[in-house]
Amino acid sequence: MRAWPRTLRKAPAAPTAFLDRDGTINRDRAGVYITSPDQLKLYASAARAVKLLAEKGYRIVVLTNQSGVGRGYMTLAAAKAINLKLVRDLRAAGAPVAAVYFCPHAPDAACACRKPRPGLLREARKDTPADMKRSFVAGDKPSDLALARNAGLKGYLVLTGQGRAAAAAGYKDLLALARAVPDLGKNHKGKD
Image (cartoon, rainbow, N blue to C red; front, top):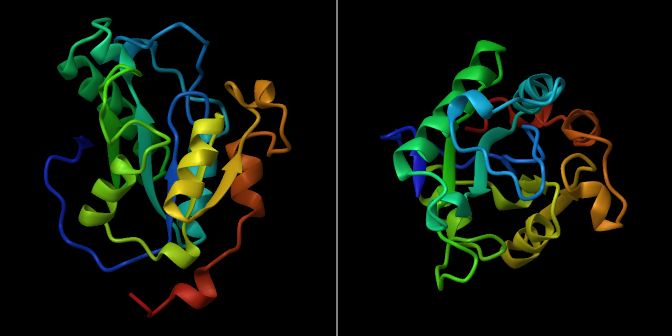
C-alpha cells in the first residue's frame, strides 16, 4: 500500500535505493511499535545518508512492514501520518524521498506485500520504475536481505536497529552504506 504520495507522475526507470524504515532510517526498539508521528525519531545520520544516495543518482523509495496496523496497535490513518512525518523530516534536511510503501498486515496474514515477499517492491516498481541492474535493497533485518534475493537485487545489511543481532557482516549505518555504494552521477546524467 502506498502511504505517500497520493499520486505519482510516471517517471522513467532509474537506479533505486529501496530502503527499510524502522531500524534503518529511524530508531527502532524490538517489540515497541511507533504508533504516532511524535514517536518517530530519525537516526542522526539518516537524512545525510538519504541525501547522499540521491546525490549519487539513486531514487529513494521506502518499503516498510507495519504489522502494528494488523495487530490493532494503530490505525491505517496513523500509519500514513507516521510515514508522512518521515518524508517531511527527510525533506526538511534536503533528503528527497520519491515514495513510501507499507504492508499493514500482521505477520500471519496471507498477503503478498509483507517483506520478504516482493509485493511492496512490485507495487513500487509499477509507480516508480526501477533500473533493476543498478538498484538495491538496504535494511537492518534478514527479511530485508531476503526481499533483495527474492527480487533479484543486491541487498545490504545495516547494523543499526536489529542489524547487529543478525550476526552477519554489514555497514555500521545507512550513511556508511551511502558512502560505499557507487556514484552513478557521471553515468546517470542524460540517460533519463
